[in-house]
Image (tube, rainbow, N blue to C red; front, side, top):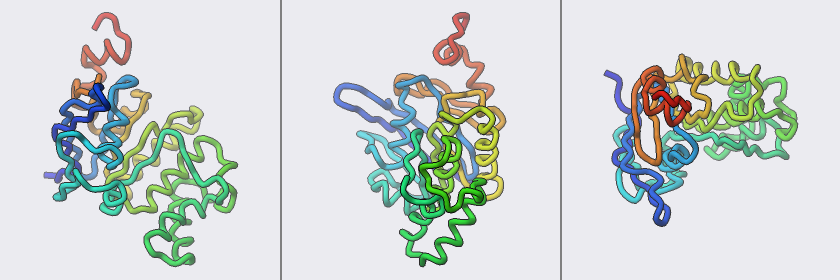
Length: 242
């Protein structure tokens, strides 16, 4: 049986009097692609921040493999194999595409020459070789999303957190992004946790999904099971008959 890579147990986060996460449980197996779904304000980004170490839970625990990382900093979690992309990409606009990727590699202690060779591999993987030496500020939204994936790969993650990876991307480019996510697992064995507003694009991609509403887990199951859940149709899809 495949081992669990990530285990979030009873995670609770409060901001003042607001409960952003309420005793959330989440288990992600090694090599799995798991989707986090829910309406705006459901707690999706807060859960990402808890896993990444940006926001500490007021109660509960987080384990990465055999290691309890509940009190670990975000930098320590990164060193242990957690990487993250953001809904709004923030490349170093004054650097070229390959230089953006090299930053993460050099920080691991690689020489500039070795870092450039390794970065070129990641840039090729995401399909940006033609833009290798162009400034990041010249990239389209879809290309910036792919650059952010390359930068995340440069940290050699075991677990990759993808935040609204198709958000703002033109429709013809979305299949390219989704294909990259499939290849992350199939070719590199990376476990993926993805927040995506567009539930439709995750069918055939995510093995399982967790649906949050008002900081609580409403339902967990396959994409089909979650999409067909009566409460999900009512809250997320606007099905008045649910």
